[in-house]
Image: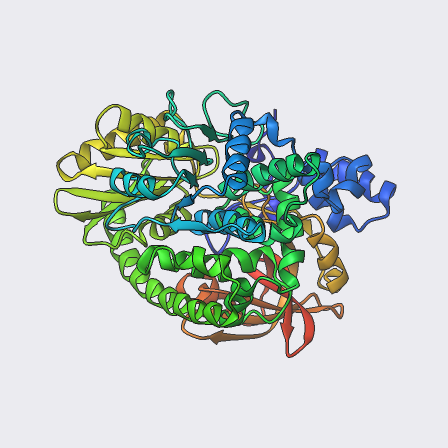
Length: 587
């Protein structure tokens, strides 16, 4: 099998302005996309995207219009789903007292909001409990579960609970259902049901679901049983805005049913029926129909801000409220907290990068630990380190005799499994998560040993052998061919995100017509190919690296430019814009 290094770099760019090698389509991809263009009559650029996503010509129509009806799995394929559904319906029917114990991130908040909204529409109420990130940490704890059990008949743990043996045992007098997606251990806690596509005895076919997806599947099964009993359940399609937000914000792979969740969820969100999301969109300045980008970078971080540095349950309460005035107040508070979070994050990021650089960025694990680093931002900073180094990264905040940290991984390296094994070996107090993201607690005196062991485990997976990230390019596009119609057609091959990266196109041999610095470190340019087509481009942070100054001081030189196409909306008018990511001199 050939590797990208067996053939010349795309457009002969071996080292770009950002230090990357450009890798284009394989010969096989070229052949398949050309055949698909002829067979379907679709634009060649769109066919290149479809071929890269593994779509065959006969499946194009279905892929471009994914429906929940076609892609939704039978909820009962998940183990324990029948027990979860039966116990939940029993509690609803008998007017039992129900509590929802949710994680403090977007996935936890949306999962809780799904259940609370469903119950409210059935005339039932539920108690919401979200643990404080700093005082209680991730997941159920003994005191909280024992306290809830005194006043409730059923506790539903969402986006947590799979490893919480002790805390679930502490819920004396109440039944517990776990609806989760985090990596399971060999032994499950003693709950009525543990519904989790990442249990060790599952097939893994639905491992890409986030917790909100699991909750949604349970509600699908619940509604089905209500229908069979001659009753009508709440409208689940109207709740897909929550599932779509969770899927993108939790960086779940946008494959299979997740594509339909996000596509349908964006459609629902555009109707602005959920007062919490409407208030959040308004405070974030979102003045157009939302895209997956907006879920991941505008709405998600604001919902998360409460759990990171504010009141833990604020996000879940915002998403489940039906009071517009309450929603406006909570959205404003979350927006304020998000601004504070960014300032805290920037401070920790600079310190972490300095420390990790001194330790070395070429090992299998990049890590940093600091006194009093806020637990609410260590995960985001770990993501920044991962992006900067193309290595698994862990960032830990130390306080007293222990540290709490968060890690982010790169494609092909299972960080969650490595952390779980290190915890089983006794070098971590606790730890868990999934392939791409995980959390841990470590004793201060075992910090170096634990990180060394994690490095060994990750090295065995090949983490030390990863080079700088290649820049994958879907194909060449000329400026005149980059139209709003084409961008809309390409969007139908999405949504794009984790597991389904947005296509990146190269514009060869272009001249810069105009270039200026925007803000502290961004670059705005206008470029063309001399044949009439011109495109505006924006590159965020370009002036912090070599690309910005190179293009600013172009002196009439021509460049290959690469990035992702998007539609820029300004005062109601739309135009094509390139999100510029890389450049190289056109020799």
